[in-house]
Image (cartoon, rainbow, N blue to C red; front, side, top):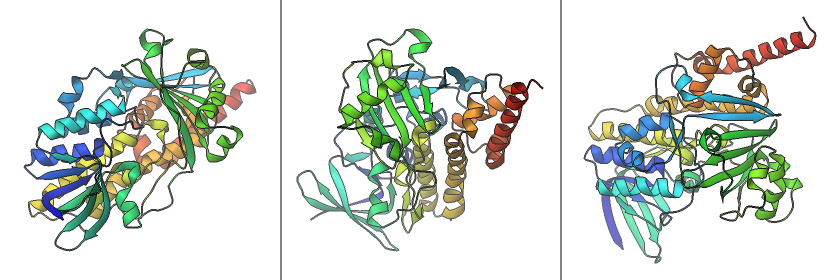
Length: 416
């Protein structure tokens, strides 16, 4: 049996894994990524948020991405009952990036992987982790490649960035109930031949069909557009047939975009994912750490997935470097508490979106500009900035502002 040894083994070559790997290589640490797929491969998560840019930059991956001419994302638009509300990242509270991208993930992930390889990271594609053993001295992964050959990889640490593959969560029985209510999604891409020119055709839009049902429109620079619906699991039961037939039945619900997409062919058979939200009992253990979607995923409504993936991947790499340099790391405080603080902010916003409170704030037609800027900073991913009241007091403020909007609307209704 073939046996290898590295300082750090990473499971998954998505954004979390490549950010971890690139940062570790910058520090002179030997890294190997194990990836079950053959790249390029399709992945959901085409919409980024500005916080990602900080992480790509620190990991040394920003320059290769800047060369790709991806669709620039400067904000987001929400539509509900014929009303529109736009959030411009340049008008957010606090410092940070004012823009990011909407990306075809197959191309995007391959660019990141190729850059890691250039930096000296070995990536073993089409290889699956079938077992994992952890001792005080080392971690051992048992691997099976496309030719069904078995090998072993010893490492001082393992970073699980396997995303929805959730390798260690399954092997070590770490699955836990999600923090937010369960929803499902169905999505595909189309060749957007009727796309309007200018801003109208480039702006990511969330069309709120019902309080818990929404449609996404994510235009990409290659002429394709990602489209999809998210809703409670039971909502999908009303649509019959295969995924292609189901999505065809749903599309007329988006009055804004149906004329643009009517009768256009789907670029691939629509994919339906049930029970989107994921969670684990712990984020780290003896010689391993979970990052990105392999640890937790909330909901696609605010495009937070890649942000948490890169944030956790970068932080995990930093803390491993610290330990390799014989400095003590308090993983509970330095990793879990930090990541969870951001997750908790976003989970509040997800819950308050689906119960309608946040929608009242997002769709307010005469908003308080200071409040809008603070909410915009959260939408941009800056959920660790405690100077922002809508981060620091997230549990209370969304509810309180929604109540004030209700009071304002009642006063107008009664001509008071």
